[in-house]
Image 1 (cartoon, rainbow, N blue to C red):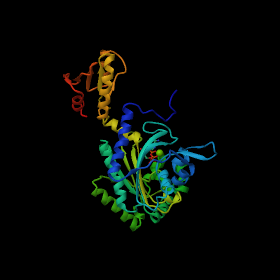
Image 2: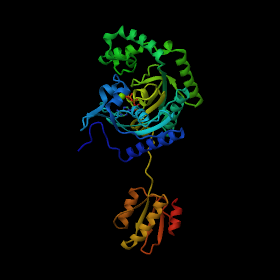
Image 3: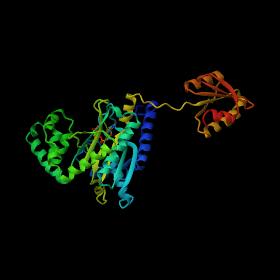
Image 4: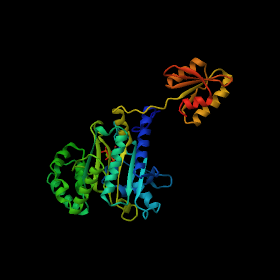
Length: 408
Ligand code: ATP
Ligand code: MG
């Protein structure tokens, strides 16, 4: 039996890195005032179809949708933001804003599997729901940057930011893009011809080689920004500088989903080959309304845990499991005092292992395989010898002294 194409098991070092990514992100987001939400892994298909826009790759090609036994159309979540916005509305929280949300968990997209790209993958993400201020954009980005730093992977990663403007800027820019791309429509890829009709800005994001040449000469949004949109973007950049977050402008960033306005950003790296975006996000002002709520200006990002984990591996940041203490009963009659001792150790927060069986030699071999830091030999009278397995030093100790010496 093999796992389904595009899915994988996380075991050992992979699992430890994955866990470390989640814990680091959860903790860091907490420092910024984000609280974790747990939303369902599947939703009504409409949550994503309406929320993400039907010209997005995710909705048009990548969703895992099925009819359940009751005849409802269900989709395994391809991303986290739509579900969080749906939850804001479902739980009547649109009057208590802002809400600062952290989430982590599996996402599902039907894509061609390759390094850093899976069909079941995992994201961490944060959202500030209900804040129109540019300070929120900067805080969200600063939190992401701190997570990358804490994971030890910030060195090879660059923050690229852009603005998509407000509605008026977008309309003006859209007209300019239509003019530019229409003139060369015959050279565009099939997908981009469709985008030209529905959402021409998405052509800027095309991965097609032929499209890229045409994109290279396309106008940027700068000349079309309203004074308000330009001022908003200026403010975001000012705050980023105040938070000490380095960035560079990339006018080609439009993000894959349809719901963004104003700020769009990506943290990119050249250390992961073609899958270079580790974290991406921006401001979205219409999504909560799509879910039936009031207008709720929001900003957030999502990061691929597998890509963060790969980056940790590249820089050699591989969390080790805690080194256990091996409790070794000397003879069957020593099992009772040995079990009493091991429970004391664990209750004091010390990782401890007892081999289930075997003579002294077998138990020591196992302790070495587990990279145990110390062995505690217990005899049938409950007398304890503590051996430091790094230095080889050994001495008699009481139960309390053993716990204290081992850091309890
Ligand atoms: P890409 O351009 O790589 O397809 P995307 O624009 O589809 O990315 P988002 O929807 O913004 O990605 O998701 C945010 C992050 O989630 C990405 O930057 C990436 O790190 C991660 N991610 C997206 N799709 C996958 C996948 N299939 N496998 C692993 N990670 C993924
Ligand atoms: Mg994608």
